[in-house]
Each structure stands twice: as structure tokens, then as C-alpha cells.
Image 1 (cartoon, rainbow, N blue to C red):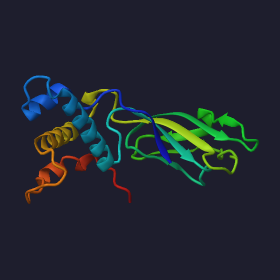
Image 2 (cartoon, rainbow, N blue to C red):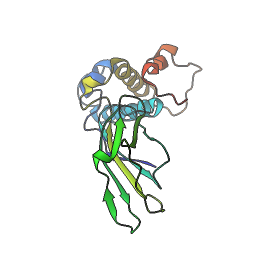
Image 3 (cartoon, rainbow, N blue to C red):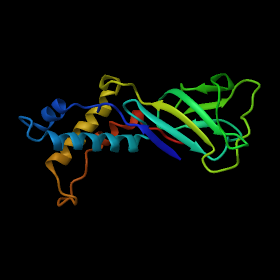
Image 4 (cartoon, one colour):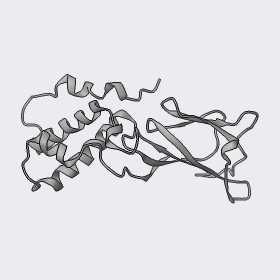
Length: 188
């Protein structure tokens, strides 16, 4: 199970950028635009299977696996802690020297350190907790422009067409969906 422990501190697109893109004058629509920016960012993260702005995540496992542990949500910036329930039920931290990380790939991976094995964890639900941060970085400038452009287009589309059901037969331009393709996490 994957649980978000800390949301992004900012959005990748500012209200000023959304206002300009939507051709909105003044701050009267700011609350709506802010909610649309958040929704568009969440949609992009779901489609891409990655975090955009730095976020905290906890991967909860019932046991240590036989091999590597994959960390989802795209670019993993750091593993902050690994804890597990030992055979007596006490929570134990795993020292960083006991495991190795490969954060260069997508998804990031954790394995036991050289010459080491995973410790014996109590056979119970949620025995292992791995806390980590993921995202392109803490600033909006860290997010690729193509993704930010997609978010702005999504905000503008929903702002202009607030109905739940489309009343026309139009479909999105192919290039709009393609803006996300270079950063999409694909499982093989």
C-alpha cells in the first residue's frame, strides 16, 4: 500500500500563470482556478504515475520481499527511513548501511546492502514501512515545461467547459495528450 505522508508545498503552475492562460482578469476566480490547478496536477500525476513537486510517501509492506523493493511515484529523491516490526513486535529502524538504493531509475529501488539480507520481520500486515520523497524537486521550475503546459491547458479547458458531460462530439487534440508522453512511467 502506498500512502502520501506530505503533499506538495506548492503547485507547478501559479495562479498568475493560470489567469494569463485562461484570459482571466483580476482575482475574482482565484479560488476556482486554484482548485482546478490542484485537480489538473493530480490528474497529471495519475496519468504519469509520478509525483511532480516533492512529496512524502510511505510504502507499507507485509514483509520484506526476496529481491529489490520498487519505489513508485517517479523520481525518488531520498529514502528517509525504513522501519519494520521485529519478531517480538517492536518497531526497529533499518540503518542506511544495511540497504542500498538505486534512485537513478524509475522506479527507484532498494536492496539489502552488499553481503546482507533483509531482517526477519514479524509476519503481520503492515510489518515494513519505507518513507521516501519523490518528485522533480521542490520548485515549480523543477517540473518540465511540457507537463506545466498540459496542466494549464487542462485548467483552461475545464474552466471554459464546466459541464460534467460533453455536449459536442469534439475530442482533445492529440498533441495535448502527447505533452505528457516523455515523462510517463511505463511498466514492462
